Image 1 (cartoon, rainbow, N blue to C red):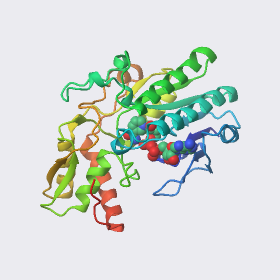
Image 2: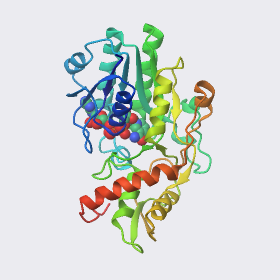
Image 3: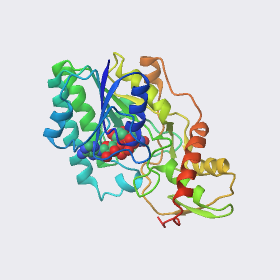
Image 4: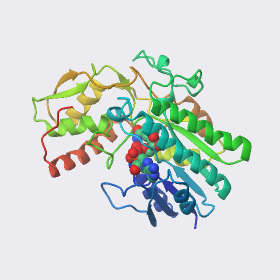
Length: 327
Ligand code: NAD
């Protein structure tokens, strides 16, 4: 039986990945500070542990797993990573985890290791025009991420690739662009734009106004979780080490995202633009490299994934009918 270790297995992407690996017949050990919030983990073993601690990492990496997925990170949406209030923790916590895991995975001789970097490592100066952002992989340097979260990702992707050069490990690095779907954080301050918009629309009545950070003209693309996992597994099992984008190239403005959510809900929603953390003006996944190297790119429309996500968030809102907090 093949074995996999999913670090951050209690998080959004990690808990979906555990399910996928189980459906492929793997033995799966998951590790996280917490259990998945919205459903029982499908892992064979779920270890509650703090991966900043070397002893914890040694205990969970006690065998040469066929596949290790390093998804654990101190992270959240714009309200968490772009305000500057959590910078020291974000950098320290995530770097500690990555330093521990890169070294112990090498010593343990694991088969392959996947590391999730982020599109947040791309230079700010290439993302000022909402209509023409440049997120081609080679545009990463000279480096100039707009957040400390992005700087830590850049450091850690280089760390994992340095182990490949110096120790012959098979580490694989992807830069995720806004992954979304059911069973992701949808309120509390760490949620990202698609979940936040679906929640606001779900809590509103037709004709209501909802608050949007910024002018809503900033552009992004959003990738549905199932397609993200297709890309992760292909990359991990390929001979290409990356870094490579895993994201959608269906670019929309935040205003269009809100309109789509409102249309799915069948509601008329007015937007009230208020000051708030918004990140760069434009970002879109450039999928030329992944197509060239892996013969694959995500293909399903944003609307398909947003419908599934909206339905799930609407159910959560109905279960938890607190009034919308002002943001
Ligand atoms: P998430 O926050 O849901 O999952 C991360 C998990 O790591 C959490 O469950 C958290 O408890 C765990 N964790 C944090 N510190 C830990 C520690 N010290 N020890 C053990 N576990 C710890 O986030 P996600 O959306 O599932 O993201 C997974 C990975 O993908 C992260 O590395 C993130 O930076 C990256 N990423 C995600 C997106 C996205 O849009 N979701 C975009 C770019 C990059």
